[in-house]
Length: 152
Image (cartoon, rainbow, N blue to C red):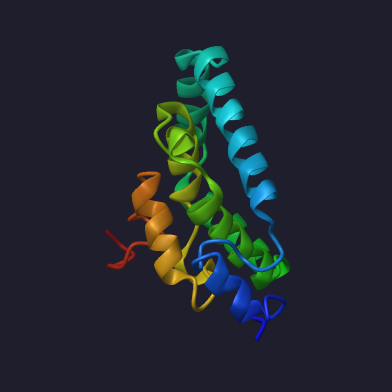
């Protein structure tokens, strides 16, 4: 009796649930290889001063309210499936060599902290928390207008 290896459930069982349907092990290995090389190039070629300049430019010159407003206005244009696939890719396909790269983590954390929780599709919250822990993404506290009397 032969096993059915064409159904999505069978493919997930064969691959131990780690590789989404349709992605061959050779493609996963290729992704690991490309991302690892990209992380090494960033670590060696991008100076710390350039990284600090752009991160400080974003954090100090652009108010968090403006960034949050821009992201919230554009969230409706991004398909939920695309967001889910991006979170899965960050959670499953990024090798540990990339996750351990100080500069890559700094960029992902600097950009990821502005993503509001309502932009995360239902069912992807656990993976998003894994991504936040893996890449050290902080939670941005100032999201909107502060509550309190307007006359103070």
